[in-house]
Length: 354
Image 1 (cartoon, rainbow, N blue to C red):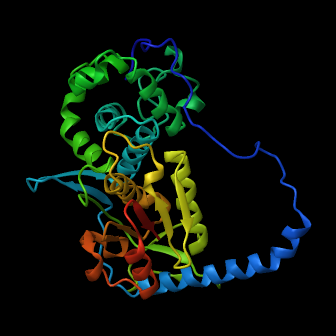
Image 2 (cartoon, rainbow, N blue to C red):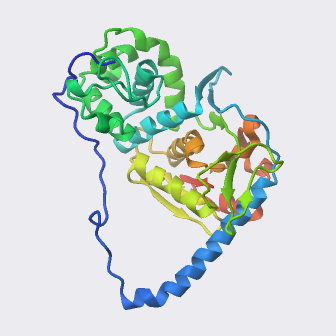
């Protein structure tokens, strides 16, 4: 946990660029808009039915038990594992770094630091007044308790100080972490470097199809309010009783929270299409690399968002496969016809999430 003031007198607030209407403003509705209302309702109803069809078709897939773990498989066949809630936070670190155009090394340092400080969980207690993912201390200028407990704020605060450390990109991971945290245990971060590097490389898109999560199927309401559970009646995890359209809205909102500026749209096939090329180019501007960053993010956050299918660059992850979930070629995934068509039509840099 940080014991001394960080290098900066106080980390700046999260650098989150927002666009759009002033908060609380009520948009005016034109006469033309009133005239289009009926058409809009019809379109939304049709979209809801399309999404429901995808949900019911996916429910027909065989499900298996799930460990609730997320795993990165390295080139040598070895694996690094995080529990699903930890992977969810790692995905946030990577998304914030992408928005700020920071390299994968920054994500490695953030993951290693949070694993040491809080086991990468957003806890509201710690040594003295330390709280949050990075155990930042209000008394040392990191912000208020409320601010630090906001994972987006605390992640940006961590990066705000990291980038002021001279030569941080060339330092040992544990040294860079220590220069930010000023901990009483300066060498402790080193033990988390291998795991941090594995997840950072996957979540920044440099290791395609290496991160998978093994999660229980979701239970959600169909368009008519009926429950749509796992295909064989297996135990399922509720997602706040959400209908499929509401679940896609949840995923879309989380995209905007984490990446800040990223383009996405709901397709008639009932899935969200994300344009990963709308992200900053980073050090490798290849659309495939950025697509895998978003695709792995979608899998790592699925325990929170309820995502059930993620498709990237001709490969598909299916949540309902439980502990057998992996990245399958599209031809082997058994997708419903409409979803298969949408996946086949997706260009470089596109990610489909449903």
